[in-house]
Image: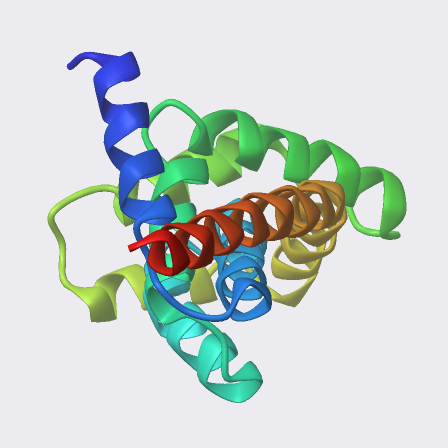
Length: 166
């Protein structure tokens, strides 16, 4: 797989979206936030819910979630979520527990089995991962929103200028 080509593909998919720059950037930011949080089996559902509630771009959210959560990024994200969550919460979780669950989540088992495996972690483990993942996701989400808002505003101005000239 050619990473440069794949990155260009997702970039072009994103910048070709039409709509309000704020809606596109906010939808993308929702995708980044959820993509970084350790909620792999629920990403799409959470992005649909988040973009519907905020009336922002579902497609931008899905694209950015795929960009930030892929086989190259999810292991470091989960590891950092674990470390941050262990520092912030009063609970302790180890990497071997996470690795066991991740293997199940990334396997070809049913959605029900995946949810059941998550439930075996217990409240404390889920709290560690969600708190750590949320704290990890916040700066990326903010940077994504403002950067993409700037890009979408530039694209909109360019499209309007092009329309006026024709």
